[in-house]
Length: 139
Image 1 (cartoon, rainbow, N blue to C red):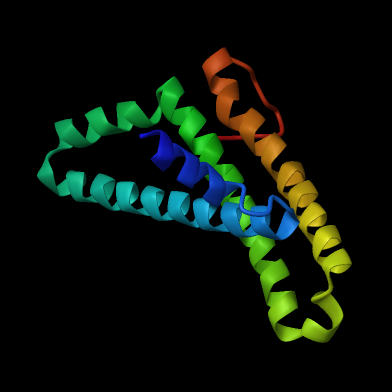
Image 2 (cartoon, rainbow, N blue to C red):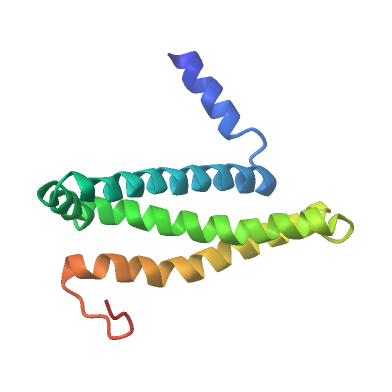
């Protein structure tokens, strides 16, 4: 068991630089988005099974633990989108964006943009749990 954990840790911390973390976060965020899509497909399927089951499942959506998962999904969607633009720039203009200094800067810009988009969304997601009224967020 210890060798498995050591192997996983070695894979996660392969080089530990920006390129590695960008790759790892892109894969994890993509898997998170895929899992949410699968859950959403199950949710839509439950409409046909019965109204009671569907509404019970909707109750799960409004629970506090699920709100934490939604915040993770939001972070994943924002990161995946911004990092996807970074990847497109590198793929189409490698002569301009391929050197390691530009890669490091672009990764940091992706993180800043992700956090700037994520923080207001996360606050709006958990605000109903604390009965906070957000005048800028009408739902």
